[in-house]
Length: 206
Image (cartoon, rainbow, N blue to C red; front, side, top):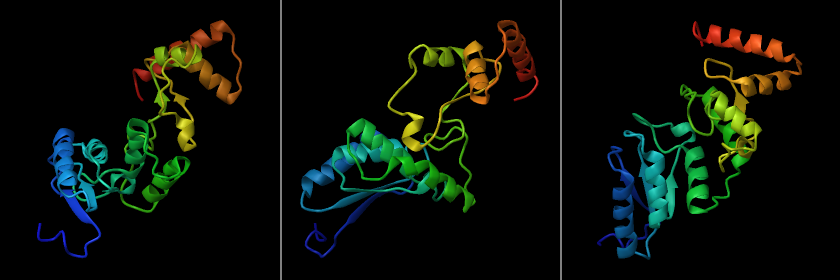
């Protein structure tokens, strides 16, 4: 209470050790916002439990005015809330537009990766190499038959394309997507032979 009369523009509320979970964050932030509605609070999350994005979204839902993020989640220990995940999360779940251009998020992530010591995990949302790669044949088949596996998280939002890898779980649709991509036409028997070889190879290596 002694600080509320001071000329302070922002009060930071940090989860310094990354030990909170979303419902705790929501309750703590809501309590502060209700008690001091005239003040501006920022939330600073750490990712020690892998909850930085979820906690940041919970803070926004509770009424926080600002959030601290880093590109690719760079930061101490397990890192901070990834900018790209938070921007997309609060837009899709809370319908809040930050004004940040989504189509530039992937390019930004790759640029920071190139100039930093932080490599992007292949399975990282939005910017990971495999974020929009389907492996299972049933997924590729569902996409071909009417976008059965589509969600709001479309690769085109980030200037990316969906890919269909070939491997042990691949089906005919995976193969056909890749053949179309490189402009090769095969007979039904040739496709069957190639797919059998792909599955055979995938048992030996990636």
